[in-house]
Length: 197
Ligand code: GLN
Image (cartoon, rainbow, N blue to C red; front, side, top):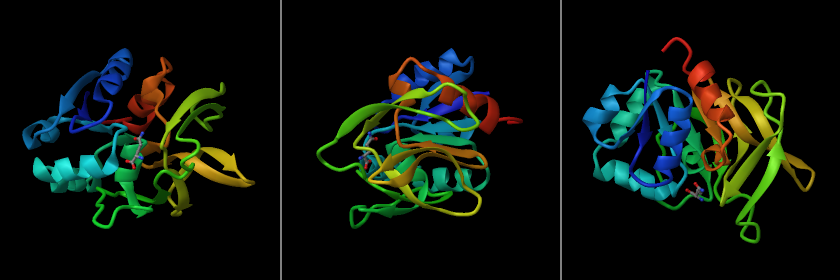
């Protein structure tokens, strides 16, 4: 199985090495011909507006959107989660997403004072041991459709906010597992979300 990491902007290298550690062929992809060849895709953390603009510049925006629609397994971390969301709150006026996940996300949801933080979180159905999760100007999920499964959540002021969600072949986390040495999310993506590919 060939897993592409969308290499327009963001922490591409870290995802490539996490995927290689999981034993799959991982390659950075940017051009249409490269994106057409992969069996699965990872959209890294970075800046969702920049990644979306560059996808239009490289003329791959519609290709990615349509591959997602036809069932390509995709994992998005942080900015990648925003790009997979059908709806975005606190978006810039012209912000576009690839979409595919029936979720509403709020950008930079944890507020300015706490730009970044790390906590241990439980990941339902993925692992019995808590994971160290790194959040950097992270979004959270405010609303989910009926087909979306919540895998992890963070509570703020008494309200639980999903930070890891799955809908069929699409997986998204608000945090950055690629920045830790813990590959359980990538492994889950490769083994479970991509099963049968
Ligand atoms: N705040 C960024 C955005 O809106 C995401 C941050 C990240 O990927 N670490 O795209």
